Length: 581
Image (cartoon, rainbow, N blue to C red; front, side, top):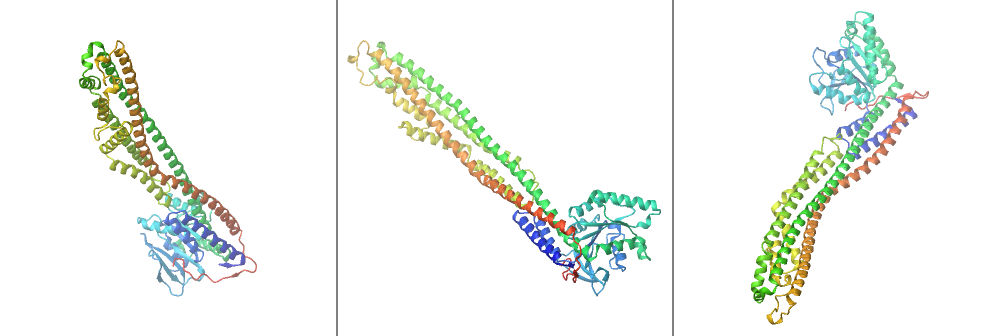
């Protein structure tokens, strides 16, 4: 590689850029293979210049490499003979094989003075039946400094070759198109037609027209080929120290561009996912509000039924007062115990059982709606966990875990809280609240039974106190009419007070249970809400860093593209590190 102060400065800046990119990728939780791609780009700066030969297995890559080197270095055949990547470097011992850290990459030495400072890489065919062969080639492509893309004159630039060339374009690699088996083309017109076809296809993929050379490896091995002579001249220019240095510096920058583009796409996908998740949270809140409104609406209807029961009691009590508090019933008025029993039998009647049933129905319905809401939460979240565009990243794993946590909280609530248990708890809470409001209820009777006991025990109050101390001698002409008016008034007051107490208790208990349900949902959602806020901050910071790195990348690319050998530059010895140690 050419050594100069300018090159050293560019190298230093590239190392710093690659370090910053690696730090960004690690910090953003990029997929492991992406992080490894950045590390490979860092190591590539210290490797020998990589001239990588790629193409389909029947394009004649091995025979092309042997013809290029002027020796039978690699095995040739009509079947896929290259099942690994061979890195050929100049060495004194012909055919000496050295293992590398990668079990599918072998380092092969051969006396190659013409390739001093260059490692020639032969890769498996890209359309071989063994899929691992293509994976090997595609994985090695980002390390290439210059690509010799081999196609065959009998099947030039196939669709699979076009797709593979797009990978080279994506990584920003410099490409020379080589059309092998040109001896099969019998006329100049056929050669021109194939050249134009390959040029047009490559230009459509790369966005520029690369050199296209028609060669015959077979003819070169048998005595010489004009196309090979032209190819060697192109390689001589491309592998000059100045051009080699320029390409060596450009290769990691192409890798950086691809890595940053990938991170930009992942960031955009993550932001889109977060926006959708925020919509999910908002919809959950809307569903929660709708659930509350629906519950309150049903509660109003249930309370109306309780009020009807009390109104019916009030009608019976009114009738009892009118029938009993009259002069024609003086004998009955003198028997207080019998009068109380008659009040319980005729006015109170089935009120306790009816209220018990109504409260039981009310609680059952509330429990059903409440548990139904949590089931809806589960189904809702399950439908909103599609395959993410940012799969296999820390972001996607963390997000999925938190969403599963919300759904898991709903499932846990459903499993831990049976309908019977929740109904029992609500009934117990309401009964306790009733005791605190009106007192005197026997434990375990239930709301309706306790209320019936209260009404029955307070029969004197409901009849205006007329049964207490009532004697025939104290009766005047207007006593009973006045007592009757007083009893009706006190009846209204007592029933109104009962209505108020019952409604207050029921609404209070509904509210308490609803607040417990809301708290469970808030607790379940809170970690995800916090995650969303943190991720938005992280992604915004990453977006700013990404923009700064892309500006630095563009500046470096411009300077490297304009790189020329200074007058005082002196060649350095080739790197001692291998291409695939």
